[in-house]
Image (tube, rainbow, N blue to C red):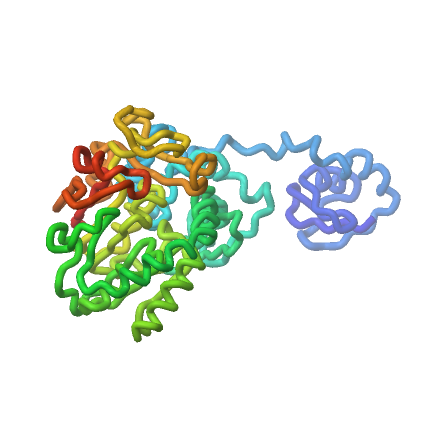
Length: 429
């Protein structure tokens, strides 16, 4: 047997196998101590070494290699301290000195996400055991953070680490709601082409299911010249078109490739060739911090993304003083809508107001598919404050007197009495 001592009294290599200090001790006992790296031939002792060391049973000797229990990482400590409040976890981590955490703002909010924090934090020390390869661009992070980043990099489309990108194009790496909503909207996209065509032809923006004009609900400024704008969940792209006509440079991202195909077709038909159409998850946008002056979402990220992820992401993307406007379902409408989706919004409370969060429509009896999110108004306001937004405006939208019939499971008569939609205007501090 040929033995090479790599470190005297620590470990050696026997017949191509790396073994621990037991081998060195046995070899030293029979062959004496030798300089590091020197080859030693001791054929007479092969069987004795094998029997004493038990190369095939190295696992039985792991207790000799045991290290002290790891100190909880900042991420794990934040989870333990705030088990039920993901935003508070982010706030705690943000207040740590960057070297202590080794994460940028975007990864902090991924850690705060209800969708994945518990599972990811629990596995923060598992990457080496699982044999997960560490991307070169995250090797500068601290060990705990690097391992967590590797795990997270398998779950999202794009995560940014200090200006670098870790990309995964595997669909099953995305959060469940992103996968389901992509499937749902790719399948449903043809049903929205006609309404997209009408909206692209409009001169004046109008909002929500009742088409409230921008004069009554001014979510877009008349002049956006020189400003960079992003639409989070652009669908067929008509809001992006409205911003483009007002002079903005527009970046439009959507989770559905089929919706984007409609947006690109309509842009070409209208002679618009400088909107940047991006297929991706609005919870993780491949743009640097502070890239935009304006962010907007009308029934895009506003309802289809996890607010504990996309709201911090929008904050990251905006420059200080930048504005975020979004419009979606009012929480009151959601608690009055039957959970099976079989009938329109009514006068019965169907679910807990304080229990709002993830609304799964995949098993709905009518038009099944998609996973939405909503919260109590106080929860929205608390999230905005913790992330770093000031509320500049809050609108509870009433259906106009001229509205008739039922739109998107909301009767006009109901929406004249109660708000079916909400719109927020936020400013980054």
